Image (cartoon, rainbow, N blue to C red):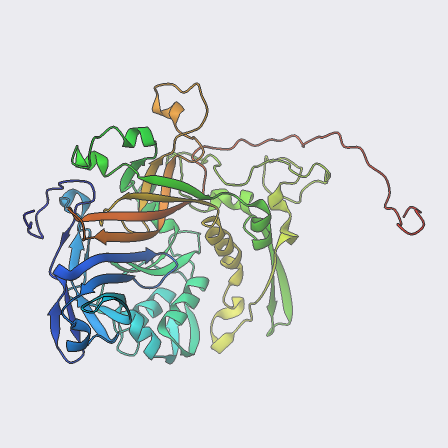
Amino acid sequence: MAILAYEENKLQYAGDFRISEVALFNAYGNVVGISTAINEIAIYEDLNSNFLTGTITFTDTEDICNTLPVIGQEYLEFKIRTPLGSTYGEGEYDFTNTRMAVYKVTKNRVNQNTQIVVLDFISTEGIRDQNVRISRAFDGPYDQAVAKIFKKSWGLNSKKKLYVYPTSNNFKFVAPNMRPTDIINMICSRAVPKFSALPAYLFYENGQGFHFRSVDSFYFTATSGGLASHPPMFEYFLDTETSKQFASPRDNPMSQLRTIDKYELTGMNDLIKNQRLGTYASKLITHDSYNKTYKEYKYNYIEDYVRVPHMEKDDVQSDQALYRGLLLPAHYDFNDLETAETKDYGRTAYKYLSDYSDARVMVKSNTAYLHNTNSENGYRVDEYVQRRQSALNLFNNIEMQLTVPGNTHLNIGHIIKLNVPRSGRNKKDEISTQNDKMLSGRWLITAIRHSFAFRQKEPLHKMVITCAKDTYGTNLYEKTSPLVLDVKDEGKPINLYDRSEYN
């Protein structure tokens, strides 16, 4: 098979990719090329991980491990991409300017002259994060502190791109001998966006660089007319019959790129877990040691729904978005007919599950005048603790895993559209009746595992995508009347010793 230039953009088959020379060099400056010996390269992205990681597996028949030598303190230099044109942007993993650091070596002897070597690698910022600690005071917006920690020589000292979603308010705080990412992750847990009301920041790296942003920035971008949805980066059809219509990956490779090998719904709404975690309802008790006071704040997921951005949204010009949340806006506990404490106009008087704020109780300090700044409101924990807890928990509910042809133009944080087939009969030709209306629609990519396989007739790129939804694909209607079930009381508690009844 002819070796194609790295810049060549003709996709020959689904899973096709281009790769540069792969160089492995050590701290002494010794360099060896391992391109012809590679079996597989794996690259991992995850919204819950601060750094890119991966593994590279190669067959060593030249005793590279001794002659270089390879001891787990080397660097890797290469770049790899899916050969698509500029329509899809500059999607690639480029480790030529900022190399990846090898931190672990595993060797498996095959025979007297051959061994299989696995190198675990991570971004060089991941190594530096283990080696330095920061002890200094910060003053101003949180996003400025993150930018300094990322770029300054006393911090991560990174040369990569950092994309920042601005934060509101100015705060002074002290980092007491902490690793850089520990400080940034702490800031993530406190930061409130400047242009929205969803305080759910993450700090992560993908193929495009590092990001410090709130999850709502994945869904929408601000325009003069309001919030405009980010269009899906790609669309997948999860119907296996659709996937089988092509005889081979070379038949219409762009269409094949949108099909799936297999998919699995790995998570659905767990009501008890979510109630215990405070996803749908919680009570926050703040205490102020300076003023000797405390306050209580109740969080109600359904009543808060229209106040924050979500993945699925109706027309930006609409006065009120339809409710697509994961909790039914209806009375649920048929044994409890007490009215709810609510200030929302027009909702039913009977309790939703989101009205039970005692399901999760949190206690936080909100002491005023820390460092003679932060005014009378302390760190304003009431603005972010409960909403952040709810927003991040939502991504552990409806979750899907897809095994698909590889595409380096997709990254964590991107929105994709999934056409999820519904079960049952009586389906019509219209795609709207063939799809599951609750699960089809926009999904957020939360993790990707790329696998580039070399040891076969044609090199093949596969990836496993983990994606999640924070809303259903269609709206849920409110039920204003209480749930009434005819339940007969089976009697008073019984004393097992003498069979007497408790009053």
